[in-house]
Length: 219
Image (tube, rainbow, N blue to C red):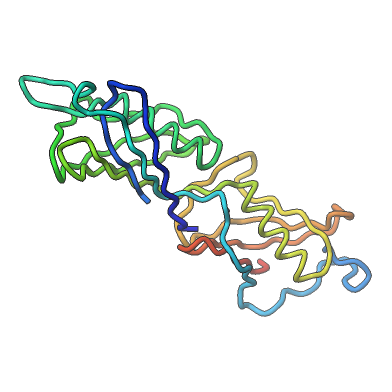
């Protein structure tokens, strides 16, 4: 999933200006329970990418001049504006509102300057790294890759269903999450279940590559 979507926005006047860019046994008559033996070790892959992935975003804040703060004559970036954009781009990506969003209190506006913000997304800590492209408020933000769980489960269920020729549902761990922090290739434990027979299921391990392509193996 490291699909890296790019988004441009304009906030209301008097906000700092910036850019952020980062930069997813069903087995009917042919396969009666118990679950059939695992297929070869090579992971099953789908073509295309998982939609609900974000590792980066490009946003354009409104004018730095009027919205900048001046501390002892030094121009700074308003942290509240960066925090609002962190909320906005995260909600747009995975439909989860981050909480406890924090940025440094005083951010000197300078080309090449860097700082980090933190937030909690669906009970998981996420770090947002910010680099200033210039001293006029153009910023680049990168952050931990997020997967939209419903999209991941749907995509993998479609692929497993095609491979075994039976409709299945897929649920991934940890249960109850709408978004997952996930590095490329890091395994996600999931369970695939026959859509018409909930007693017929199998454990699978799912990975999502850097380009957003999911793969699975039977555990």
